[in-house]
Structure formats: structure tokens, C-alpha cells
Image (cartoon, rainbow, N blue to C red; front, side):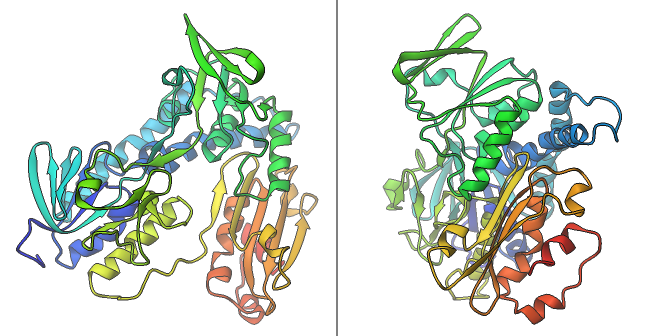
Amino acid sequence: MKNPKFDYDVIYIGSGHAAFDGAKTLCKLGFKIAFVEANAVGGTCPNWGCNAKITLDGPVTLAKTQRRMKGIVEGDTKLNWTENVKHKHAGIDPIKVDREATMKDLGMDVLHGFAKFTDAHTLEINGEHVTSDKIVIATGLTPHRVDVEGSELSHDSKDFLDLEVMPKRMAIVGTGYIAMEFATMANEAGADVTMFMHGDKALRPFHQPYVQLLMKEMEDEGITFIKNSDLRSFSKNGDVYTVTYAGGKTMDVDYILDASGRVPMVHNMGLEDVGVKYDDKKGVLVNDYLQTSVDNIYASGDVAATGQPNLTPTATFESQYLKHLFAGETNQPIDFPAIPSVVFTSPRISQMGVSIEEAEKSDEYTVEKHDMVNAWFRQINKETIAQNAYIFDKQHRLVGFTEISDQADNAVDMIVPAVNMHMTPMEIERNVHLFPSIGHDTWKNL
């Protein structure tokens, strides 16, 4: 133990990637570590986020691929949603048990309950007080509720991921990551999906011409988009929900999913009492060392207002940075790499680094666009949408990339080293990839 004055050297409020990934190494270095967890160990990502959704999405993408291959692959593929959810639970439920066992095996404590600051070094948990030299706020985000009458009648992303029987008619509020991904799943499972948009654009962080292609594909699959919906209220009569929107229009559905966004979990923790500053929408305010307005209190992951994408890889990177900082392995501010992001729809859209929009406003960059839909490798599975764009600086180093295709997630992952290591054309040339592969297909245009 590094500081015997306290019960622990570091307490993490939360047990997700923003905490665990760095903490396990600190523990091996002799730090006494504890996690405070009010819900499931592991946090959002494995339990109600990335792992859960990609497990449910696997059969969805398989069914869509089979339809494109009809005539080559015989038979009809129909998604059984109830069995899909059981499959999800079989894969996901053990994670929290295994993670907690790993924590304890490493010598870390897991304190179940809600944490509230009583002073800068002390937390109250279930009526007990524990102290720590340093405290890391890693509470993440929680689903937002749209501000309309009857909002309590809607369901959130956690509810959807445990939905055992897919309703026939589903209203989805929002067109961000969660809304678009879950709409794709629900549609494939047989639901009649209507998406209520706040404005007239979906997936705002992504290249809008690609988003338009995706929306057209989703409409062709039977999903309806209502732009500028101006939601008024939700009501319920028996088993039927009614959505009232622009101009007093109404729509009856069997389920309302509020996927209007996520907000930082910063309330009811006593942050105000100890002087930790935060923003209700952005999260806990931090400096370039992930340090809050109180010297020994830090924030990591989605709850930290860093301006970075709220993604698991970001949380992992921040957790690892704090490990280096606390262990004395660095005294430098955090230096974020370009972090890839993907929306797991069908097709997928991925991006990282400098965007097309940013590049086209500056003479510092060149943009090379490619339509690969007729390329032989993309026709193996008969992809119907496959486009990408590479953004280069004046030294022809890759600084940005975006793609829409069924393999966009794997494509962006392949070029991460080229972007973050600022590879020159000669260095890129020395990276020889398997052929045929998505790696070869992606790097051949560099």
C-alpha cells in the first residue's frame, strides 16, 4: 500500500473499462484498489452496451447477408428474437461474475452500493465510510428521457436489450447510435418501426451523404422516418401506446423506445459538497490530466468532459493513462490518439481522424473517394453499398478515413496504425496484408 493514511490508494466509482483496465495493473504494482459498483460489475459496455448489442446484431447481419445471397444459399432465414435474447444472456451474463472474480483474485475490493462524497477523500457507501488517497469518478452515462408528457411510459436501451418478445409496432425516439442500431435489429425481427426525429438529420457526427444512403436502405427495409417530429406526449390505453406529435398527429404503437441520448451520471453523489465542478450535459469537468477541480479527484470514461467520443476505447485509453500517472510513469498531460467510431447498422458507417467535411474546408488536405460496390472483394457477399474516403495531409500521410459498407468496422480498424503513427507512403508500403482480406482491400488505396 502506497499511503497508509487511507483505506485505499485509489477508489474507482464504477467498475467499467474507465476503471478496471488501468486498475488491474496498479494493483500488480502494489496499490490497494477498490471499486464501488451500484449496478452490474463491468458497467454499461458488457452488460447493456457494446457486448450485448453486438451479440444481438450477429444474427441480424447473418440474415441480411443470406437474403443477398439468395439463390446461392438456399432456404429462408428468419430471426427468432426470443432465442436471440436468450443467446445474448448466455454470452453476456457470465461476464460480470467473471470480472468480479478476477478483481478479487488480483486483490482488489468490490464495494456494492451507491457512493456519496462526504469529503475529498471519503465516500459513504451503504452507511459505511471508506477513505482513499485518490478517487476516480467513472460512473459513465445513463439513458436520457425526452421531456414530454407521459415520458415515464417509454422504455430505454436497457429494457430493449432484455425484450423477450418483439412487439409488432415500435416507435423509436431519436436517430443517434442507439436508435439506429436498435431500429435495424427490431426491423429484422419483424417489428413495424417508426423513428421520430428531433430535426432532419440522423447520426450527426457521421458523413451525411453516407447517412442518407443508410437511411434510404433502412426505408427500403420498411423503417419509417418522421423528421422534425415535434413530440408532444405519450399515453397508454390498455396495451396500446399513443404517440402525439407535430400538429396533433397521433400514432398507435405497442412499444415506445426512448433512444434520445445519454447523459452523465453526476447527480446524488455529493459532488457539489466537495467542490467537484460538472456540467449536466458534458459531464465532470477535467483538465489535461483528467483531474477535476479537486486535486485528488479524477474522472475517466464517458462521465469525463474531455470532448472525446464517448466510446469504450476512449474509456480504456483514459484508464490506462491514469495508471501511468498514478504510478509515476508519466507527468505529461493526456495525449489522445485518433479514436475510431462505428455505428453498427446494416450497412455500417465508420470514421476516424479528420472528417471529410473538415478536410474539404482546408487546402491542407486532399480527399480521395472510392465507390467499391462493384469491386470483386465486396461482391463476394454481394454488398449493395460500399463507399469510402481517405483524407491525406500534404505529405500524403493518412489523417482521416470514413466508410459505409457491411465491413466498415473492420476496415477502419485496419487503418488505425497508419493514422496514429503518421506513416509515410514508404512505411505504409512496407505493411503487407493477407490476400484476399479486408486489410488488403483497405490498404491498397493508401
